[in-house]
Length: 282
Length: 321
Image 1 (cartoon, rainbow over the protein chains, first blue to last red):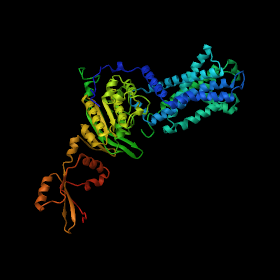
Image 2: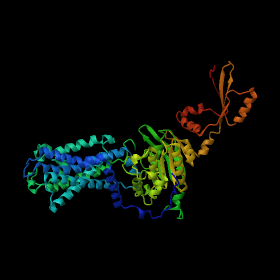
Image 3: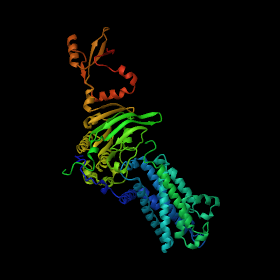
Image 4: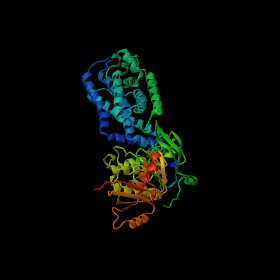
């Protein structure tokens, strides 16, 4: 270590040189994505696991016409895209935040001038980037292996855009909120994984939603994954299938409302309960 | 540097103390982790906080850093209550936590560059990396660094924002002597640039070497506030030790605590023929002063009575064959 010409004088106009919010959000998102891309376990879980599940389910349950001329494979693809968003935004993010809290990573960030909002928005942008790649891979595999058509109607992609954005935003804030529930980073998977797995069973991912007992359907209707999956079906399944849905339609307004409510609730809980430090460190 | 010496800080700010604490308290249930501290740390000084584990050093520093909320009392850090940190305030602080930096799979350069982007007037990234001696590790991921190298990375992350005030919480724990010397040199150069440094440490030599003033904290209370030289001066009393046969013929070791050891020895020479057995004059080290200070609080009530007073002769029976 050599000499630091310490407080090297700098111009007085600190406010002018202060990095903008957009620059900070992008900086965080790029950094997080860089870290993610260097973590083999994360890459495998986020990118390969959904593809593996798609291939498994398509092999086991494919070929079943579930009504409206739709194969279960196609139904499952929409469900996988929906639960992939939840895996990345809720489960994976919640676990990594809990571990970061344990390792004082969050404390360090809190001790820096980075605004909390830039940190969280950086997380959301990172999740969006990862999810887009994840969905593109799923669509590619299903198109190549199973000839599942990729929609070409711009209206479908418009629907995709808002369902995707709302779903990611809701999943991410809920992941951040739930990360504070685990007292230790190590216990975070035990808190988050059962929630995601249970929701996948009852929300029309692993099974056709309308084949569930109606009381289970009603439980699932409270949670976001059911709506996220249904929203994705409205994009990747033919419109003729809408009649096969529980309500006989895609229920776009209800989807938007439920996801938005979860986003707002998650945001409120996050702001109220988020901890930068370990529970015994305050 | 040819630039003007000040940056956006008014003269008023410069003349204000960097930190003022009044009757600061932090309680956890029954435990008074910080128990009524009063302290003023001046702008531009290196201030060391010493104390045993659990004395309340880190709790105090973390309150000042805006990480912990105090139970009561007042605290002002760079003119602001640290319980309500703002972004502008954070831009003026450099913090090196007690725990070592992250396991992020990012390189040294990536981490320092990212940190620098959070501040309005950062230091040059490459210069900062070189200053902490990590230029050869700039492209190495933090996960592949040794413990000491990671601590240097922590220093780089704390200084890259060009802080006015730095908190260093046990910065050199686990350093080898060479690395510690280098670190001291680095902190001294920061001080030369006008940075205020608050340092907690276990190491007396570190505090003695670096600090303009130091506080010794034990059980949440301040037991000494002094310059290192002043603290050492408290150890003016020397201990003269020798052995002599007692009335029953057994050899007794004797000690005398005195401000005038020469006079004591002269007296011994007058009363002893030939060699004075086991003669020894000990000057207490800074460590003795420190141990005495923190020991006092362990049993405050009885400590004063037990402590050896100057001039008092303590005899201990010691059976020697």
